[in-house]
Length: 239
Length: 143
Image (cartoon, rainbow over all chains, first blue to last red; front, side, top):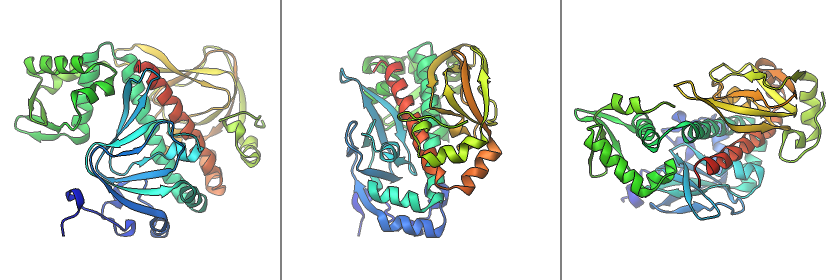
């Protein structure tokens, strides 16, 4: 029987084949066994809102497959994407641990499998398994360093084109595929969302991508973006 | 050096945290403008800011350096670098005279191994740091 959204679903963390590759999930069998008893597996279509900024923390979501955007809003209602979460990340952990409202919103940007753990269960799980605390701390530290990296880019980039060039280079390192045309990136975000990642407008992103294309630094075919002149983009980045 | 009380800081942690970590801290006075650690250095340990404020300074490849965040009394500097075993991703410079308690990396790791309850404080501190980063991004992104 086909699985919903064509996802390869893993209901049992103990039997997960990619567990060893994941920072949080790569724990010993007894600890993962304990995790299995408190988590609820869910499959979500693209565009599912997992939690909302300002909402009391209900618990954490472990992103098993798919991706999610973490966003924050100003009082004027402008949106900034602070992170694109990748498989293996634990979402909502900092708010859950501090028992403070979620500081960001999380929304899937592709069909995703997530394991949800209620706050009380997650805190008990951490309290009973120092190993889980250590893995959660490592996961949170990665999130912290990723945020610091974004701060560096937002605060030190001289121009918006530099920010966009750096974003494309980051994507090429994370998920780029080398082809004869250059490094291929599958772009799942709209121009509006790319603008929200670098703190600019949709119009500016569209204009800059056209400019990069005209200067033969990139090429775009549907949802695929090819970096055809990597050194050209690298020369634009000072951060 | 014993921990004081405060909100959302290591000083607000459970009393046993101060009991366990306090005796290990090497107190020192830091002069205004002094650098606690530099971007790119391997972390030597953790710094408990008991008094004062630090600029967290980020540098570009071109040599530009800007203070983009600050760390205040009650924060622990260098914690996430120790946990993830990464070099410092910014420099910390005292804005005014400051008092910090330093615990070397090996000792901190040993005390964590011996007192797993301390992990909860580590988690809370890193979670607070993430919140501070997102606040900073909101302001830098002109969000």
